[in-house]
Length: 617
Image (cartoon, rainbow, N blue to C red; front, top):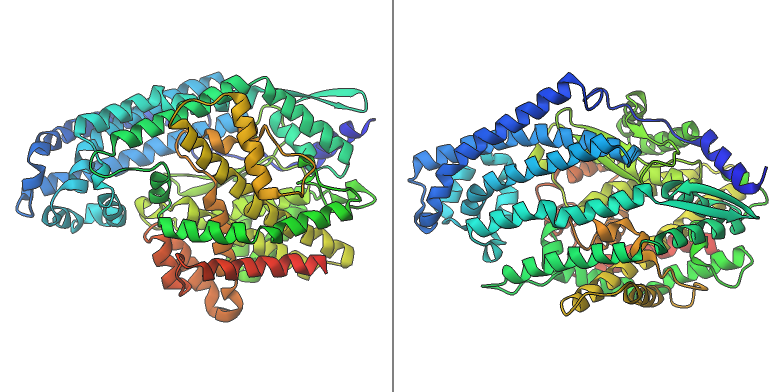
């Protein structure tokens, strides 16, 4: 049996379980699914009727006051109806999304996803007039609305949206943009998802060609065999090369749509392409600039880690296919970790913070809320989601038994824990931004890594864990910044014209060189094509929040020793407030720091420097 076959076989042996979502719906044809779908449609009809009152009030929006008692009461009823409808719609959407993640070729699920997106759009349209009024109306009227119980959970979000009022359009314009996004913006993102879930790779290793899906081929990047990693990497690159034109069309369309949107919203105040991501992530421009400046000034911290990796692997410089390689060992198979063992390791690490965190892992496993199988129909990547009705989280990944997979599993379970400790809050209070979402996930990774190092049986075992710390430094201090610089320059150019596939490749090459310097033998020119994050229709700049979360989480982790027994309660409270505070206010409240100043970021970089130094020494 050749090496690639051994690797594929071991993936099947060590793979994780298949999740069980039957507690929500048994399948698309289940009676409970049909009942919820019907209820969702009827709710939207009622909400559309309720919203007509607010459509007629738009004309006198400037005259509204706390004395408009009937309108304020009607606003409370509409908000309540919308909240109930959203729970049902979100639950249906999560179930369908889970089906498509495991099998992207599920035609019925694809059709249902399109139906649900259309219904969600109708719901959003129906709420546009109320949201516009709450954003632009005088403070007396808005204050009276927020005093009602139906709006209590929405108060923070409404206050944030009122900051966005200069960029709000008329009712008809807002509704048109919402409606057209379904077959415009969202359709391009769906196209990319369909391509990535159906694209097949032909991995040529030692003369034997193995055909596999992208998610499975990505697993070769974690092999201990360098030739296998190279074969897998080149197969993935070659597969994406056949889709360059399609991917370029997706990126040009998504960015063009957003830029036109921003231009339209710049009537009273100019809107830059970075303003919307900053607003959505609840951070100020000064915070982002301070962080990115410190990161670029300290790029050598991660670059030195990569140079050391190359030396340990007896090569002159790492190649892109070496970035996820395990620590060098005589027997690559020794790196494989069964899923059950990985769960046990993570549970032990979580329990080291507090027994309740460890018990949470037991809940996830017992209820089969983790998807970790290895198949050719799965979409690549890993994520955490939740069902709105039961308020229960789910973790999705392709677990193949590598140490990297253990880190990914810990990362996603960190997200799941974040959702778990918020499950008693009203749903609107749990909508936290990406910047703060990464806090719990990277905190979990850090906890697991440190416990593994602490309990390592010998020096070699400790080195394997610390090897992962070097990988984290590379990912968050080099790779993520490269994505940010690529997207920034891309949007600047896209404002003038569309870009060709070759121009995307050149721009990605330039961004990687800026980040990695001379640490790589070649750059991943096709990364713009293969990285899902660039093609997500719902958000742009799906990158800098990861670096933010990495460095912010390290700052939070540093509080463990200082706060002692009080840390866990404070940590949980911090997570619970992520949907109710800005990143800057959260940092002031729980860390006593100013995120717009370089000092905090320098202190977090210093932690990374010490972690890497522990290995290099």
